[in-house]
Image (cartoon, rainbow, N blue to C red):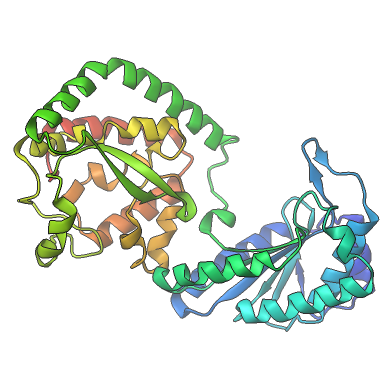
Length: 390
C-alpha cells in the first residue's frame, strides 16, 4: 500500500490509538467511498461518511493554529474511533486536512448517539462555549447516503435541518451527493471554471445575435394566446437538488397544468416525465416553438445566472425527482443544461429510462470540452431538422 504523507496532528492521535482498522491512503479511501455509494444504491442500506478536520481554513489557505480546534478534533476523533467496527472504513482526506470515516449500515440515529457523546465530552473539557465563536468552518462534517427512493429522502430533509439547528457551528450533517465523491478520469485542471467562462461568453454573444428572434417569438406568443404571459416560469431541480426558476417561451394555453391530470394516462415516455405527441394543451404556434426548440431560448438567462449550463442533463421538475430511484438522482450531480446527449439522440422519442442512462453516460465524460462542442454542433443539426420534438 502506498505511503501517505501524514499531517503531524493526525499522526500523533493515530499513534495514541491502537486501531484494528486499516487506515487507507486518500486515493484508495475515495475509491472505497465511491464503491459504498454504488453499493447503497443496490442494497438500500444507508451509510454515514464523516470528515473530521484537524485544521481550519481561511481565505489565504490554512488558518492559524488553534488549541481549541486541535482539542476539539482530538476528542471527536477518539470518540469516533470508539465506535469503529471491523466493517467500517477509515482513511485520509485527499487534502491531508483530516480523517474520513465511513460507518456502514448506519443512519441518523447512529450519528445522534455519537453527537451526544461528543458534545458531552466537549462540555466536560470546557470547549462548548469557545466553539460557538471560534471555528471558521465545521470541524466535524457528516454526510448521510440512504440509497432510498428520492421521495423518502425529501421527507428526511426536514430532519437534517432540525439536526443541524441543535448543533454549534463545528458540527454539520448533509446529504451525500455524487459530486462530493466523484473523481473524474479527465485530468483537466480548472475544467469547471473553463466551462463556466465558455458558458458566459457564448451565451452573451447568442443573446445579442438572437435578439430579433427573441423579439419575434415574444410577439408571436402574445398574439397566439393573449390571455397568458409571454414567459412561462417553472420551478426546476438543479445541481444537487437545488431549486431554481427556469424560463421558457409559453407554448401552451394558460390552463395547461390543470388539464395535465386528465391526460396522464396518455403519457408516451413510459416514466416520470410527461410527453405526448398531439398534446391538446399546445396552441398552434406553440408546436412550431417546440419543434425547433425556440421555446427554450429564454434559458440563456438561466445560463448567465449560473443555474444552468449550455451542455448538461435537462433540469427536471420536483414532482419527477420525487419519484427518482437512487441511480436516477446521479444526473443531478452536475449543473443542468440547455442541451444534452438524449436531445441529440432522439429527443422526446427516447424513453425515460433511456434518458436517465444517457445523462449518466454524460456525467462520466464530464470535463471534456471537446465532447461538449460535439454535442452543441449536433444540437444545431437536430433542431433544424425538428425531429423528435413535441
